[in-house]
Image 1: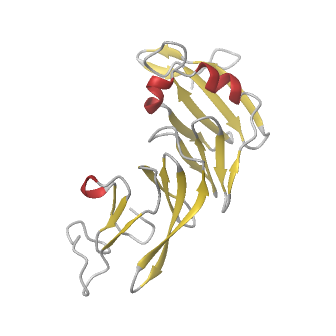
Image 2 (image 1 turned 90 degrees about the horizontal axis):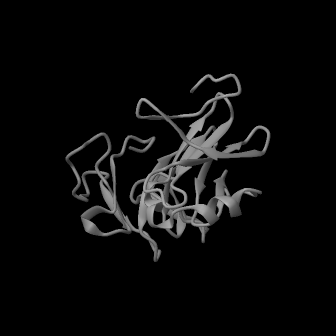
Length: 199
């Protein structure tokens, strides 16, 4: 759902590039009629849509090859679509998250941030992370933000693991990276701090 209260279907009608939005504040009026604001747009890309993300200023649409901005412009077209980054696609459908006004994600072999412009995020641990990732399980990579600590976490499967068993953390306040193995307790992935507390 966009900030303008449009329900959006990504990859609609089995078209991996189609963005289709319902009439404003409706869940049933998908037909593009002169009496409503429903519509659709096929992204001009060779990539396939992986996910959408609502940020403070616009809606982002991520493919496995590039990043698009979906900007509300009103009648008659309702939305404008701009390719804002190329060669920066996400590695999985859950590989990105927002933190304040910026959006972070893991690509196929690099980390990225969008703050109005797409930038590769310099990382001294990137070779280590991507060098040990189990690429056959890359669709399981997932990301979360911990804004109280200024941290962005990515969990990924490494070695021969079929599940996420490693993590990489970027602290945007200190511009520092941390890597580690995930611990398991009571069926949930946890991290232990220096004094043994889990969170």
